[in-house]
Length: 227
Image 1 (cartoon, rainbow, N blue to C red):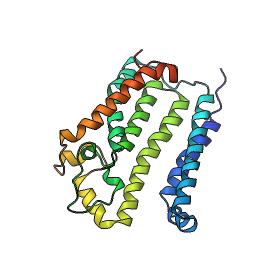
Image 2 (tube, rainbow, N blue to C red):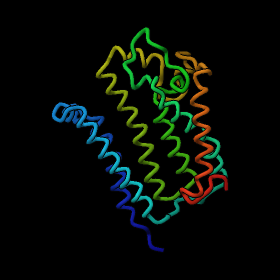
Image 3 (cartoon, rainbow, N blue to C red):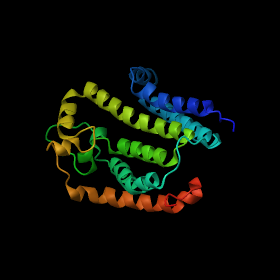
Image 4 (cartoon, rainbow, N blue to C red):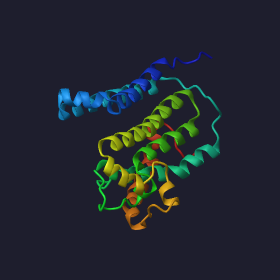
């Protein structure tokens, strides 16, 4: 059997990750904002990101299946069991109360709910989704696609922290004292508390998204997660 050509997918993955990390997380970002203006920069950045994502998805769809390890029932059921958590984290990260999207000052509201788990719930939710799908799929194309998504999410989150530490040292110290990059680290250290009531909306939204995705998974992606 001929080995499928993975180069187009690799190039798309490099462009997708590079267009995010190579621009938004480097000194190039303030230079472009100063030259173009924030509005134009954000518009162009969004356009390039969307085009790179379309390229990545199209390249993935065009890449033949090349198994790297055999599919196993346990890997699929681990994905089924943990995907609700991933979607709850993503749903919670969409909250306007996201402390990483605001200038966090002393005396402001303490991060609660999913932000007590990690200050980057959306990024960790995306990374967990990618890792679970890679584990369940076990093929070369999924390794490249899911690897790119996981790397972008976690490296991007780390670069977000670095930028905030540089741009707003006082706000960063407060945020870092009450939250953690790694899930559950701040909770385990007693630096924050979960506040279950703040979890209600993310849990409901995440579980609803899980049920919808489970219902349409077969039609959209050609396979059911349950068998």
